[in-house]
Length: 314
Image (cartoon, rainbow, N blue to C red; front, side, top):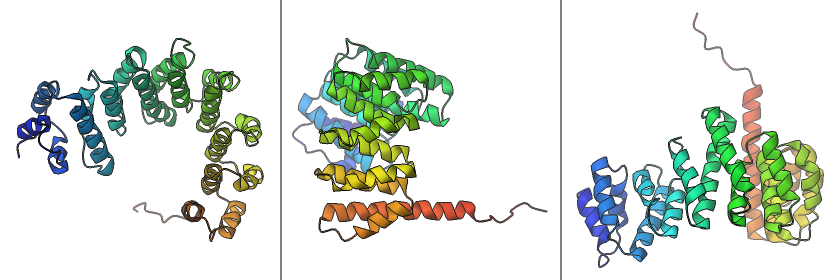
């Protein structure tokens, strides 16, 4: 079936959406993109939402499929749900050319939902810049935009939260100040995001704050503190973390198990092995995954420590 016929079929609400046909919208040529754009404008809202959701699912399930040309086109859709879903669809796109588009959505889109999603999407570029996989200048650009959004009192709290979470991997003093300011704010949601950001920032200076939050009455705050401690990954943390595995909240318990898997070490492994036959299936499954993660870490450590063969040609 020709792509132009698939685009026409897509617009016909009398016909069901067929995944195998939608898959052919992968890697659209510029001519097909123009055709898609013309037809897309004529499709009713419910159908547009259905199509974009289906394409996101297909792209997530199969790495071979690339609908980026469609998703970028849909960032101009009049519906906020379509625009927001299009941002989600671009989750694998690491092209710096996407940065100004996302910045435009964060700064100018009328929808807070879209702004928040754009902020989160910029987070992967912040992380890439911090890891050195893209030019540092992109890190500076993204960092400035996200920090501005974090402190912008005219933006909705959800947008400011997501901007803070997104900028967290950048290890500058301005970012650390923004995290501490949000943590000390009177807004509970900002404080929770600040705790999440502490984990992504990976600075040991956050340990006293995170250990304090393990005793917070709010389960969501305890959950984020546990996750953040897992991200920081210091074995010294285990003595504080293991007792929290008996938390009254199942999500907090599961977060502890996951954190133990990330941190690793003998103490974590022994605790997990003791609970490998837990009567709760969710805990049993989480323990199995955590032990598997520790096993992979141990194998990598052994490989790195063992002498490697000399491949130098004489």
